[in-house]
Amino acid sequence: MTVSAPSAQAQDAVPIDAGDALELVEMLIGQDPSRYATPLAAMHGRAELYTKYRDLAQQGDPMAQRVWLLLGDYAVQSVDASLMQSYAADLLPAYAQDPKALLAALKDAPWLAPSTCRLLSAHFGSEDRPEEGRIGFLESERDRIAGALPARIAQACLQAIENPE
View 1 (cartoon, rainbow, N blue to C red):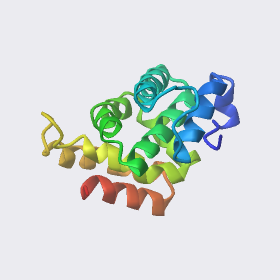
View 2 (cartoon, rainbow, N blue to C red):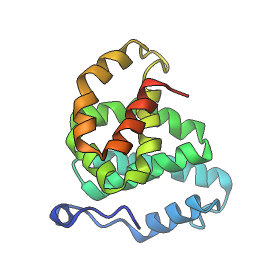
View 3 (cartoon, one colour):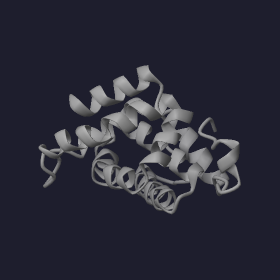
């Protein structure tokens, strides 16, 4: 998987389960994961995968964080509404908990930045979360994001957060 953690963090990372890796690859290429007998079971499996890697990421596992962000990219690319809503609720609090770790993951895998930033943006104005929080977030995080990511990636990320689709 191309979401490997930098070597300095590799010693803290829990290796991804082989079955989970296969499930992610199958999802990314548009197949129902072979570990499930039905599409409904696969849908429930995606929810379990999301929860597993969200929780591991929140515990500070750098590999799990990258897998969780990869699953977020899948949610955006496949327009999986239930997963996207989960990210809209969970990604900003995860960022607030450890912004350096999330930005490090995006620096290491910049191709995940567009979907991650779009999902961060989705937090604002979704369900009972006020749209006005977007301005405060951008004001407080603009310099951190710009300093952590390559200029082109940071600019695109900030634009995605500022101007939701």
